[in-house]
Image (cartoon, rainbow, N blue to C red; front, side, top):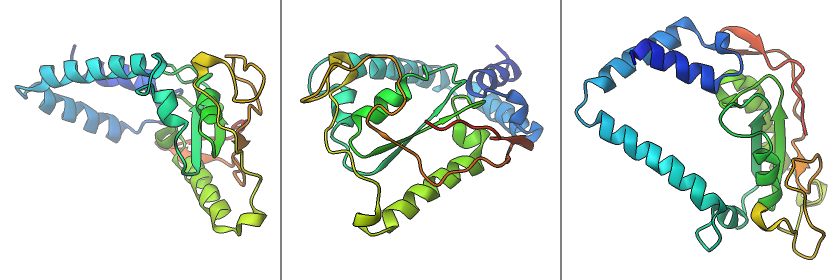
Length: 200
């Protein structure tokens, strides 16, 4: 596969709208791949990365202390979970699952966005991050009520002390919606984007 073909495949897989990628950025990615192809360790590194991704996926759903869902439930930092509704690599239903597992989380679902929201609609994502920081900067008694019960990992389908939880993504599944985020036109890769973004 040529560097051009590889670059276009990655862009197609990661972006809901590939036209958001600037020609200059595509050219830079192609040049970077040409350099990688000439490195002796490229194939080995690529295969190790692929194995790592598969291993990570398996660990996420296997039971035990190493389960990534169990690890996620122990996160204590306020967290913003962002999902693109047109993500071709990760099922959009995963984002609400993640938000349900992390105790103090906010969920932001973006319409018309794929796997790399921070690249497709960078200003919109930045506004969401700033809104989270603004919220945390307010006095504790002025913040939205914090969720105190952590969910178990999705494989168990049950909240602690609560009813069974459907695997399907549901609005308002215990997480909070991201606050203070609006969706005026964004500019990512030289094209307008982000208008009409949906928030859950």
